[in-house]
Image (cartoon, rainbow, N blue to C red; front, side, top):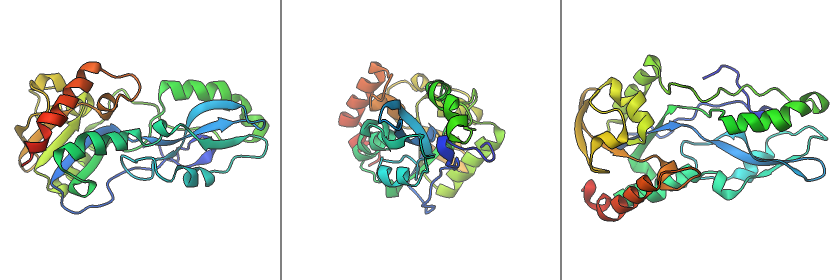
Length: 257
């Protein structure tokens, strides 16, 4: 993570990780952490940016709760407008899709699962970068706005050091089942320990268990589509959405016994 990185309006970028460190039945690996999004309006109430990342999500795979309280803690300089909650569908959609589309069909709750991301912090995607360049940067000098120093989405989601950190978390969790969300955890993490498959489609029938040696012992691996796909969150694949819906209805309820 970039040392001393900050969001628009000054909130510090935080590392987002599993808080409950008790032994878990399932370890789940995603891609990178989300953020709290606000609608930024000017002093006259005109919307400048519909959805602007302004703070790290308060817990991993956040469900969107307490958005207004979080935004109230961010100071907007006088004359620079105000921050309002972005659309509900833009705060916490990954967490809700995880709970409703993966954990519930498997008969699991959050207390059963150790959650992890390849990149344990928010990344600045191209759309956010463009919006900042259009609206935020031109107003920095006029309103005394702090610089934005968020790291951009990396080309590689995990180097050797991060892969080792994730493996250490897996060992600490003591989980027997490892869930991968989409291609990236497979390509950037699993393939370095077992190179036979480098993407979700290489596992064959969707959402089945595969026995692999990971870390200190043999575990059951469950490759699933990313929550963006299963929850139809923005651009997504109808193929994976349909495959997951079929899995959730017919396979998941009896998969873990």
